[in-house]
Image 1 (cartoon, rainbow, N blue to C red):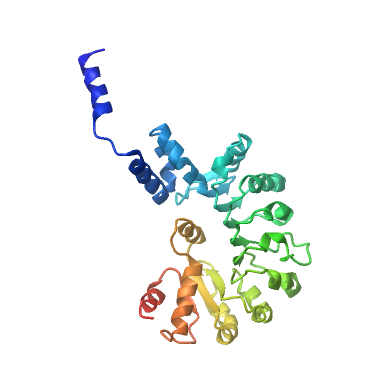
Image 2 (cartoon, rainbow, N blue to C red):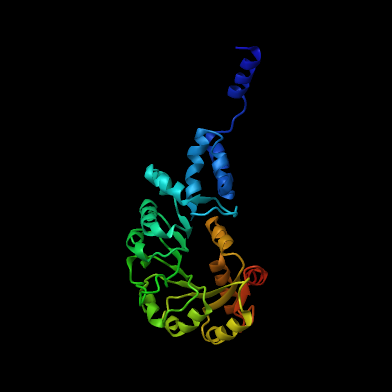
Amino acid sequence: MSTLGKVEIEVATSGPRLPPELERVIFETAASEWPPMIPTTMLVAWRVKHWIEPLLYRLVHVSSALTQRRIFPVVPVDVLLKAIENQQSSLLEAVEYLFLQDIPASHSSMILGTIFSACPRITHLFSMVPLRSNLYTLSSIDCLRHLAFDALAPLSAEHFDFTHPLFRNVTHLQLLQRGYGGTSRYSSLSAIPNLTHIAFNSATLAVRLRTLLETLPRLQCIVVLSAIQTWDRARDLHRLEPQAASDERFVHIEQNDFHADWYNSAMGGSNFWDLAEEFLAVRRAGKVPRSMYSISDTDMRLPRSQTSNI
């Protein structure tokens, strides 16, 4: 070996090194702050891969299509299924936040069943694909607290069974459907034992369920979400005004980007639920007019600045 080679080895082995515990904290912190860099960072060393690979699966966004989003890493369906097939159970058990964007319709039931069986510790589930055929598998997930899904899929069902064990520990429920489907479809909402927060993506649905919501004393917060890009402000505000006037738990939020909101929450930041709670506290304290009930998630200065004075 050349003299130069010996010098390089000596420098590499005898040079200053961080304690492994501190090194791990640094890599885990960096990975948590910016998940898209995890796959690249894992290449640094085997020990680094061992430390941070579970963090890659803590937050999983599943899609069958390529996406231009770089907010958080997207796991293609086939990659996730291969991980399950290879029995990477220790990694998949780390999944807490699961975002299901789209899955091949022809095999969705089988794919969802496989995913849910392999990820028993999901606490937050946002599903843009129908869940009805996989309720049995989901019911085994005891940790589920936040659920966003479409209760109208499939439309052929007369009502949705909210008495299902899937909902036994759910505290925050977001109904994504834009349609209505009749009041009777939601009659069993009152059977969800721990429900304290509910959100609607449809002003029509919230208005139609006004009487039902008034019979749910456990509810602390009722939110109607509207996408800023497509919202008919004058029409919906007019329809929501009577409900807002009679129910102090009610708040309307103009939402800019639901992907970013969900990701921010998964990363330990605030989301629309937090914004709604802060605003309701401000209003109860008389810091804003009692008649005010509509806010935007693009400008959180009012509720947050007022909250500091409570």
